[in-house]
Image 1 (cartoon, helix red, strand yellow):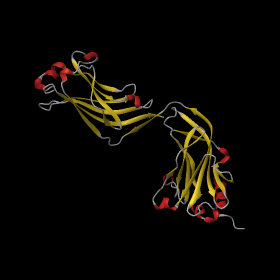
Image 2: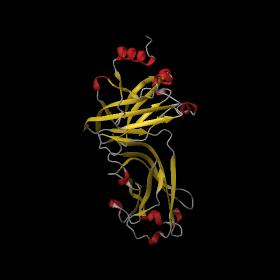
Image 3: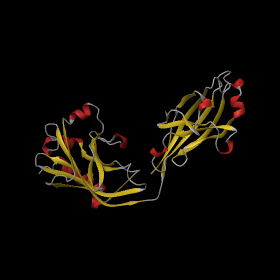
Length: 322
């Protein structure tokens, strides 16, 4: 008796690798089903990867990830690749780990039952921030999938599904991920301050501006700050709202703050590099320029009670907690 193409494939793969098992069940997937109509149009329209909507199982969010022509990043050929991935992990506590047993389904529309793939021996897979996805590079050969006698693709329609069972969860030690930015752009922002002599606030803020996906502001202390109080202007670059940073996040920035000389363009400039964070949201100079120099008309810093400050900011890297 001639063996089914799909069954021959199962026997070969199972005997050679013993990595996963295939079974058949009449029960549909418990947690999620994806029905795809006009499946062939995915390839025709260059859809190399399809991600389902998210679904909940075991108190977490998940999604199915499908590569209709195989996962090219893993050099998969002549097979469909299917994976289970975690979603919405940003709200989870640092160092989280979730161990889960999962099964992925494919409907046999001829027999009304499901082909099921799962890791051999019910192996738990460990999902964490550095590994959000597990599954099967070679879920099924494309040739077997397209063979109408197997019932997986009929009238260009197929149905995939998933079941996820969380077995345990825990937190590990702290960690971080530093992402450096190649060819980071420098952003300039000029702040014109009118009626300087009438400033009454201890600290004056510029308008908020963006650089490196972060919001910034210039801070000026017209009567000085700390050891420069009463003798010098104080000038700082600060995160506009450090409370929006996730715990453990840091932003590495190179910045220059210039007090513009409006007469001869001989600007005063302070330059620094700094790791900005929620606990250290600002960096600058308590003794930026003396009152005597600033108020001298010949130096061009204050002209007709107007001064201008320029900040140039380059964000070179961002570090986030794992």
